[in-house]
Amino acid sequence: MQEFDTPTRDVGQEAGTDVKRSAERLQEDARQTAENLGARASEEANRQADRAKSGVASELSGIASALGTAADELRHGSPQEQVFGQVAKGLSGVSDAIRDRDLAEIASDVSAFARRNPLGFLGGAALAGFAATRFAKASSAARDRGTETGNEPSATMAPVPATQPPADMTTPETPMTGSAPATRPDDVMAPPVIPSNPKTTGEY
Image 1: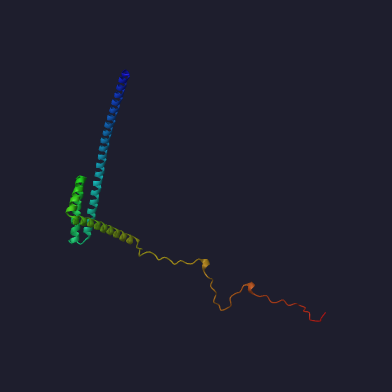
Image 2: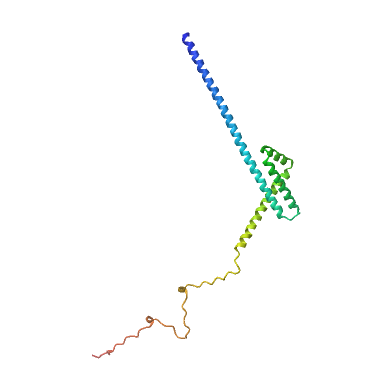
């Protein structure tokens, strides 16, 4: 029995060693695959962050432009004109800074500013919304004025002649001659027929 037990144990040990090695290789392959996927995910996340940063910068630049346009429409030297102009310049500077900084740093700075000055943060957002609305209304009014000007009729246009009714819809005029209107042949009653040789009573 011992002669058969020794080869069996050896075969079992070799099989166990092979299984262990295969498991280690699978574990290593899985680790490398996870690292590769993590690197790809990190690269994709960085690309998305760059696109988001560019989009935020473009939005801020558009708001700054709208604020500048709204400031130009206000009375020169008025407090509203000065505030809008200052906010427009500030947002333009922030837009330029966003393009050159990391997104995590930008989020941290915005959060810190909101904590330090919540009223200023909310006021800036409200001003941006008001300026965008004002700019949209001004653009719509300008388009409406252009449409009305283009649709005004020309003063030299010839008058449109009155439309005459069709010939078959006109009523015939009765001649005013004082005589009775003509009658149709079938309207004249025929005289009664009298027999030529009437017979009297009692005659043969």
